Length: 202
Image 1 (cartoon, rainbow, N blue to C red):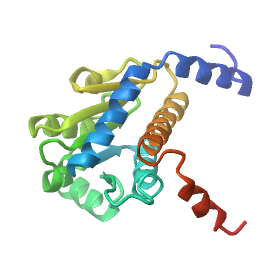
Image 2: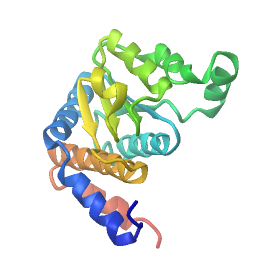
Image 3: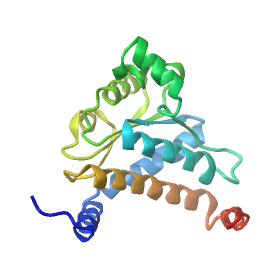
Image 4: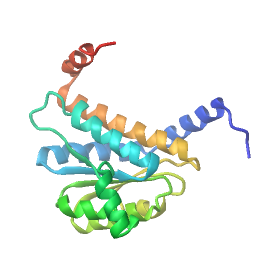
């Protein structure tokens, strides 16, 4: 195994980003815009670092990409409610922590984004299957060999690399690409965002 260095990590990250299917990124952008226009919800969910990415992305679209808009993005991170997750895991099973809350909300035309480095996390797979059955647009964010979710999703964002940390970085970069794309589409240069950041204290 090659020895890790910051330089080698950077090279792997850049190489993985260059291999990304940018047509899929554009598809995801269009799915976000369509969901907003039609009043549909966007769900994100994942475990561990992928869960952190799901939460981060939801926060970005609830505030950053929605600021200044009358019609906003309805984005929900299914791994943000710890009491419900713990209750479901304890009483039903950890494999159902995403599908159970999804049953409360999912509607036809919604967008369900499952994030799993391996693509095989059982709780993500189950929620993706359920979302598909309910007529939602399913999105797989995966790494390594793609796994089960890459085989079932309508849109696949695959970080083609055998490295979890690089996969997580690529997934967050994809959300940032989509965020900037929708902001440009809806707000142009978005001068209001500058006002928001200017008001922050150092």
